[in-house]
Length: 174
Image (cartoon, rainbow, N blue to C red):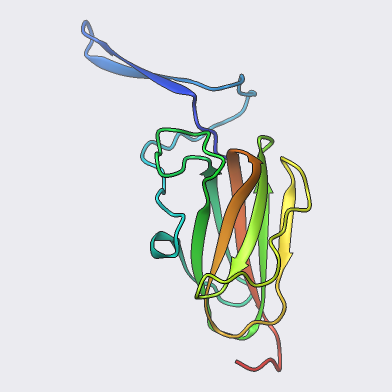
């Protein structure tokens, strides 16, 4: 799954039959496939702790998965803002590890960072691959509490899939 934003949308109303149409123009031809059209607004703003997307409590061996677009920034009408960042807040209820997996589209060289409740990075951001790659961040053992996953760009904009998974570690203290 990936998110693609059109470069433009043209609306037309046919007065003879009363029907409306929207023509979406993308930067490149879309391959033959089945697509889902999501009509609505971006999840922006979601680039600060105060307005992070709420992923909820993630229990051991459970996952939160989201398909989103990086590049819509504060102005959701523009899809080329490479300074955009997306934050996801989640809670762990047992001591253990966190795995963040970021799969970027071909136009996005994504970076994934794990933050604590005060927005301090836990370890280094991960950007081991180029555009279109998969980044995997594995934390050490962490206690219970609130954490954030931050998605940013080293270069470009585009769709991505973020997976947040926690795993309980037997004998680890909270």
